[in-house]
Length: 257
Image (cartoon, rainbow, N blue to C red):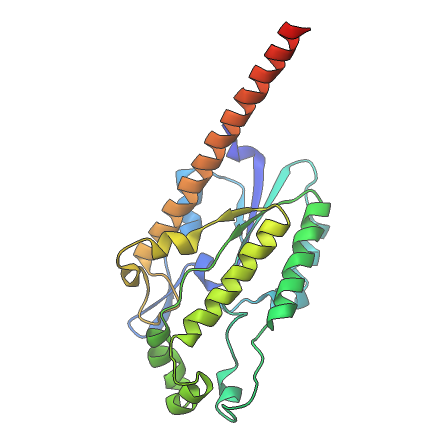
């Protein structure tokens, strides 16, 4: 069994793990985010949630958050970093987009830069003996996001021009960034918590999302916590099985000597 009291866990995230929801036409903070629920149910005492609204990987690194984290690592404990962000990186500066919707516009963190920043950060953490765990991205509901958020800021018709009149291109593009996260996690042999799959597997994942189509609601946070806890328990079970098989192999080797 993993003793969570001996782990020092830090969550690097955006508004989702920060517990921000969109209700009654305004942003609010939940009393218990998915991170809080997991910490409570697994009795995790040393968990620091430094997630922030609007956070991107570009901004996180520019502000020196990663440098500060590494500089102040407690090397006498087992350090774990959870990466749960990337949705804002995939988004656009819509005020710029509508000025010339038929021309190229980069994402807040362009795709290749996103992958490079993420890969380099993972390797820095691993070089400092920090275990990295990824969460992929919760899905986006394109129509809700465009109608509730983007069209309140800019001309929707110009946005639709940029999207080639396919509103689902918003969700498809965000899904691409989620696939980048999966790719980086796999390449660097990191644990990956399949949050997105856990949402999509429900019959009505729209019931887990806020009116703005990008933030999980209270039920969504409970769902994320359930997904995380289930995968952690599976991870523990598999490790116990591997440990038992290793012990059985050692016994067999001794018997044959």
